[in-house]
Image (tube, rainbow, N blue to C red; front, top):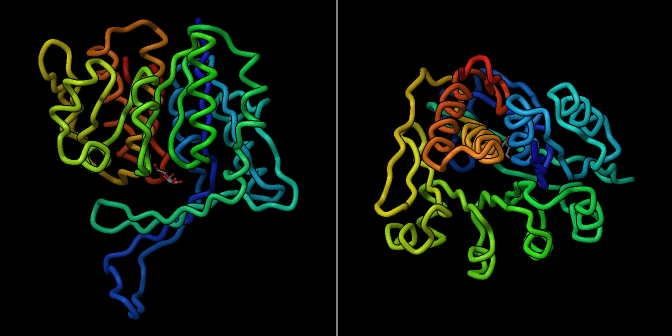
Amino acid sequence: MGNIVVIGSASIDLVVKTDILPNVGETVMGESFFTNPGGKGANQAVAAAHLSDHVYMIGAVGDDDNGQQILSNLKKNNVNTKYMDIIENEASGTAHITLFEDDNRIVVVPAANNYVTPDKVIPKLEFFAAGDIIVMQHEIPEETIKKVVEYAQKHEMRVMLNPAPFRPLDKEIIEKVNWLTPNESESELLFENEVDKALMMYPEKLIVTKGAAGALFYSDSQQLVKGYKKEVVDTTGAGDTFNGALAVALIENKSLEEAVNFANLAASFSVTGLGAQGAMPYRKELD
Ligand code: RIB
């Protein structure tokens, strides 16, 4: 079985649940506060590692208590952390999340995640092989994505890029990755509102996630693989669960339609618990 190598951010989420969203200059009383492990990279690694025993993460934490918590959480969740770096005199990444009316607003402070640089990442890729799947997101430096994509192409590794959060993306990178998985708003921004055209231009590569409605891709014609509805407690991390599960299904050689269906199902479970990683399903639940 091939490996899944997630290269990305690992953070601690600081979450406030509130019934009232403050206006500018206003103070309101919130409902509750909690912290839990997050970061899009770590979330995707944990989602994949609930479903596969071959998941590695390449990333960085600070030399603080949060960093230790992030690493022990990854290990506890079956993610191999031997390629994670600890950055001296740096804080671990944090994400500041407001949960309001079934949705979230997030401000990320990358800190140690800024050190996931090509010089640190590329040498570690030598331990992986052709056919392995690399999964990346946009919470690490852009240069790293570029260099990893080049390396992967040379060494016949496959790349899934989840372009979240949105930042402009070179066409060259889109051409070179195997799968690109924006959500609806990211796809509108990436393709300047011409998403249908983009889907046709990148058949079986561009997969646009639409939350509970499912996900779209193009293969002969436009396909909507319908999602599964479950009672929502917290949608944070649902997209990450989709990406982690999608990578697992693809490394198991499922067809794209089957893989997207599997990922939709996993994502639907993930919204039923609090926290980004709070309800990521295990294989048994999906079976
Ligand atoms: O996708 C959800 C994640 O985005 C959160 O866990 C938070 O860390 C932010 O990076």
